[in-house]
Image (cartoon, rainbow, N blue to C red; front, side, top):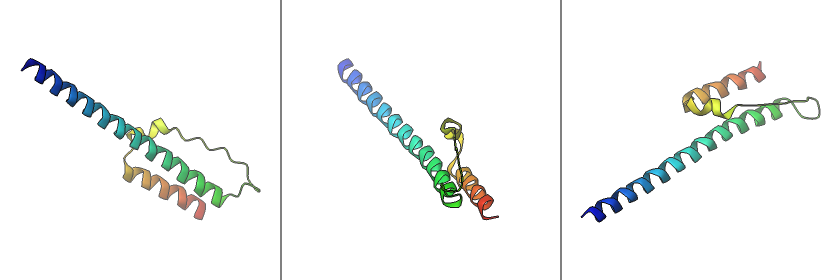
Length: 83
C-alpha cells in the first residue's frame, strides 16, 4: 500500500511539474508575441529606410501583466502612431 501511495504521489508531482512547464512556456510565448506586435507596428509606422529604431521590452516585466492590460497597452501604442 505504501508503494502504491508513493507511486501515486510521484505521478502527481510529475504531472504538476509538466503543467507548470507548459504554463511557463505559454506565458513566455505571450510575452514574445507582445514584443513582436510592438516591433511590427513600429516597423510598419516608421520604415527602416527612414528611421533608426532600437526597441527593448523587458519581457520579465510583462509576467505580471494580464492579457487585457497588454491589449490596452498595444492599443495605446497603436494610437500614438496614428496621431
